[in-house]
Length: 193
Ligand code: ADP
View 1 (tube, rainbow, N blue to C red):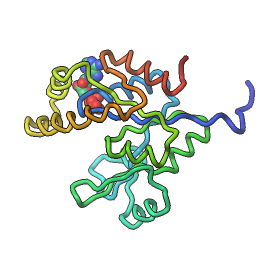
View 2 (cartoon, protein in one colour):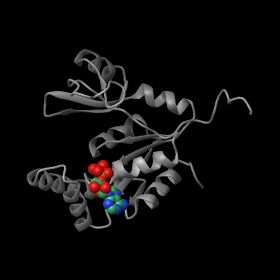
View 3 (cartoon, rainbow, N blue to C red):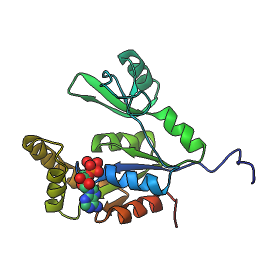
View 4 (spheres, helix red, strand yellow):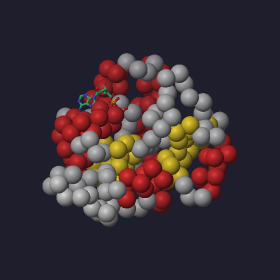
């Protein structure tokens, strides 16, 4: 077997945004089953780990001081306050490491985060995962049975704001079937022709 190239071509970054319940997690899981080299970025947070959460796997758990340091030094691709008490963000370094190794990276983030990545990593491919219809989005969100009725209503209102921003994206992928949506993401990442 040929030795690994010292300088492989840089990997691609795909930023995936879409309303809650559209199927982002499901489609990314399918993409990773088919292309195990795809890495889904892990967020950093200042909040305490919950039971069972492992550092570097679910989140990178970091101190508020470290978070501030990373933001000030350009080490966060995007970040936000959540509930005005804790900060969450995407550290740049683990993403850069994989790109330098020629590996594909997916960032599953929200609309505000994607707008920041437009500034911090403009070469990324920005993809909006859209539902086949609003009725189907609502059915998936309700069918998942992970949120209260009130929370579902809130997410559906947020979905309207997200759908209004669809024109900001380089690609729109409709999640009609999981496999066809995963294929389209693989195409954007250059994993298939
Ligand atoms: P998100 O990560 O965007 O919040 P999920 O991946 O949790 O969404 O998917 C929401 C629900 O929709 C889940 O119950 C999932 O099984 C279902 N789902 C996802 N993609 C499809 C699809 N293409 N067709 C039908 N159901 C889907």
